[in-house]
Image (tube, rainbow, N blue to C red):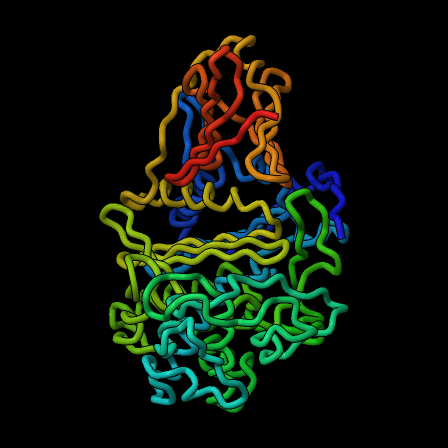
Length: 491
């Protein structure tokens, strides 16, 4: 069904509405210092691309620009939650404000908690992390074929996305839909709306992100413990850590009566039924808050230091944070090295929700950002602001650009349509003096000149180079993105 474009009517009413702040200051002077840190974070948003002479943005300004109904944040300092705050509306039509206790879908951040849950089984000697997964699956067996080249998949492969499996992610289900069982999901049988989880590469060779693999680990936990996954994770991970405002919900009965954020598309249109449901609990179905996720980060940080073992030992926490193959993908987390600093992190994207967290491996710093929108650009801008205000060494190093004066007649020669691929068109326009680029199915983005024929986008590392033919006419554009490039011909 085609999504209609809904005007962002809520932008006129939500910007002056803020939630209470959860904070830990002990004295008047500490409170003043904390309030100043919060104020600086709120007013210092910046992107990865910075134009020389530009000022930073406020959270309110970026929420308005990106059509984000609600943002909720928690910041960790010295192994404690320094503050948590929410902005805007959990539900626009109900005029229901978001606050720090409003639950958002954690999407793929669920995988980090799942890794801790599965490693608890390893710690309790109920499974061998490196043995064949079929040793522990009783309600279903993984159907090995020639693609796996007679190599067995281990639980470590599942958690590190090195099992060579299909199904990157899941679309969820409307609340009125029939919800499939885990076995139906893994087999791709109705009412499942995703393909079967099968081998697409030899296991243990390379990283291939697979929410399907995470769902197999969910079934391992269920088969080994003889209980449902939500109860197992609640008892063995969420409660011990103190994540009392979190739960896994795969059907409407499980989520009724709780303070939940409503999901929105990037246009501002509400997701039908308020949100989707995800029976793929381990991969996508955790409902939580930044403060609760902060408790997970802090427990992981303290366990790594040997100062806490509410769930895992120091040895297993260190294993969880060690890349399995390559430099980044560990067990349920990704390792991100920034100069002298190293962080564990994960991002998440469900229908109408986006979220991300970072936790430092040293020093006890961290940040969690959750939004009820599919426009996630604001999250990295907030994270950049936190990193700057809290002086995270080497974390944020923006690319500095200088604008180049391009005559109107030259810039207007770039206006037109360029074919990136069949049915994918890049449209270049100029509105009120501002050059804009819009790809099929995406919104318009402002583009800025850094040379006579080269433009860049502030919100992503994307550059456009317009190319003339032999007669001097612009007939194509080269798109540079993430170290690669592609050609789009004028049509």
